[in-house]
Amino acid sequence: MKLTKKNLKSLIKEVKEEIAQEATMGSVKDRVHAGSYSDRPERTAKEFVVMSSDRGERSDAENKQKYIEFKQKVKSAGFPFTEFVGSWEETDEKTKEKRRVTENSVIIYSDKRQDVPEQPKGLFEFGMAMSKEYSQEAFIYGELVQSRGGATRVIQAFDASGKVQDWGGPWSSMQAVKDDETFWSKVRGSGAGSAFQFKERVKVTQEVDAPNSVINAMREARRHGSKKLRFIRRNK
Image (cartoon, rainbow, N blue to C red; front, side, top):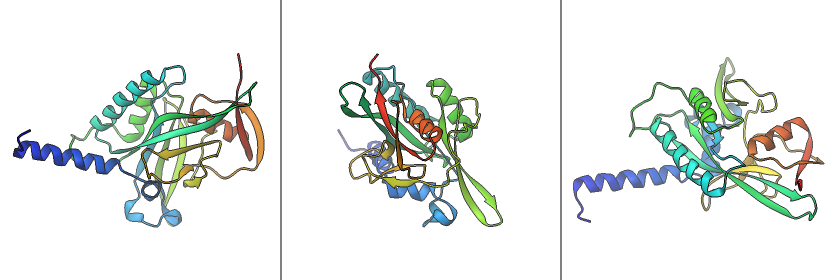
């Protein structure tokens, strides 16, 4: 390929986009944490959305294709994002064999991209629209709330109609967890850092039906309060 000014600009743009996607748990924490939780307040995002385009009844190939399409829509809407992997562990009811299930996810920030026109739709409304389009039960939305004491983070789950879900929050920060935790999210890519959850640690173990998404896993965690969950895949 002959290196022209136009080609050079294109290559620089591609490199910048690749760098933008190379995030770690630490860099995401900088965007999510606010107030007393934040070590770098200048990096705090005003809003963010965490969601997936996957559905449990689709094949891996179908989910992969939907994910590619979904990411393009996020980009076209003018929002920067970081790719995530959502994951949960389930146990076969009969064999007791454990397996780790994953889903494609992203965290989307309200910052506007410089390489696309600004869209009139806000991030929360975009999360609603994408949840409806990709048949998602819920998405996670984090916003900054201003008070005399300064800015604090409020993180909750909402459905596609914008209704708050009483099982999903409110949380105020993210915390690192071990990879053998029942469910977690993690930045996609090598060297991405620790897995994390938007919840407190739990102690007592309870067996429940295996979920079909991290959203469902979070719902079960909320429903069972302080109990540590073991997800069981029932044989039908």
